[in-house]
Image (cartoon, rainbow, N blue to C red; front, side, top):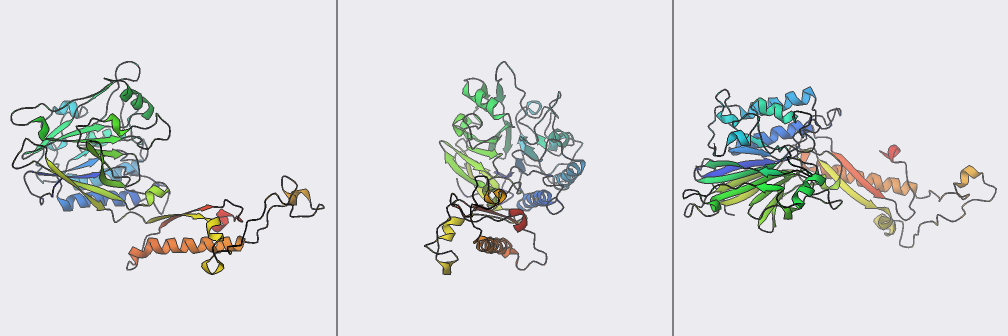
Amino acid sequence: ATSGSAPGDPDTLRILVATDNHLGVHEKDQVRKDDSFITFREIFEIAKREKVDAVFLGGDLFDINKPSRETMIRTMDILREYCFNDDPVALEVLSDQTVNFPGRGVVNYEDPNYNVGLPVFMIHGNHDDPAGGENLSAIDLLSTCALVNYFGKHVLEGGGAGNIKLKPVLMQKGKTRLALYGLGYIRDARLHQMFSVKGNVEWARPESSDDAALTSWFNIMLIHQNRVSHTPKNAISERYLPSWLDLVVWGHEHECLVEPTEFGDFFVSQPGSSVVTSLIEGEAKQKKIMLLEVKSDPENPQDPPFWRSIPIPLETTRPFKYRHLQLMDVARLPVDEGGLGEGWSAPDPNADFGNDDAAPSARGAHGRRPPSSAHEGWVKDLLEKNVEEMIAEALAPYRAANDPPIPLIRLRVDYTGGVSTINPQRFG
């Protein structure tokens, strides 16, 4: 990698990369319904500010397979606002466009009926994958309207698990060449089986010539599959991908790991989601997207091009704080540190806490009274203190704001060890 050049360099290809926008998520929630669209607009504001040549989206543009009319209209409005203009497009597509974009047969900015100044190239994810007899998705509607260039949709052929051939979108800016591979979501177990059988997944490479050696291409792939394996066959391993790739952009996983990490001979970037969709620890990290710069070697243009990635934090995402609290660990702290004292021990749940004449309903299922709730007040105070700290931490960047956003807070409490419990709904 090397330092890139300023916008306007005729040989520097500048691309903004994002995944998992989940437009329309929480649209029934009056507080959070706009979150995904606010951040989606910010992404395109960054693209406009950075004067990028293209935007790559790695799947799950929509949160559900059949987005509501409101979601579709809001999405199309944003894309039309930022993508339709008279700005010149410096990218030239060299590959067969009828193969790359079978729905339209041509890249949108070369269609004489539209003025496209910012091309978007995207694949589908598991939330917006094609379905039905015609194998169509909501993204096909955007493609038909020339708002995006939809590629990476593969029709599985052959018996058994099927087979596919990945053919790249070959593009060039000045002397810099890029081969863009796309693999929209396929059911993980089926794709795992395909990768496991030699020859079921084929990769087309650019043709080598005197003017463009095979080594002069920057090979990037957009993929949208499980990366974290919960069972042996429900995820796709990086080892299935060819070593000649330079960079893999991995969609589907929502944790932001956007800085490329080395895996064998290539690098993997996992941008994560641009909006909080579930209150899990991985989504509490700062949301980011990536600016990718690729430039051919000016002294040896047939050698591999230089490239670098620049993480860009998103500023409009709703603040979210996550904390895990182990009550037993806090309870054993000294009293002056907020605990119950080092000599404290949890009551024995098997002990008989009542007299033999107590009513059966008061004794519990095994004829014994439940443990005392003497420390319920301490637990409630401790949880309130933690929640207040998390809210303050979430709102710290907005001290000067007149109307700060309502933060998302998740405090996960472990009661293991016999500590008194409280009613979580009443506490919330």
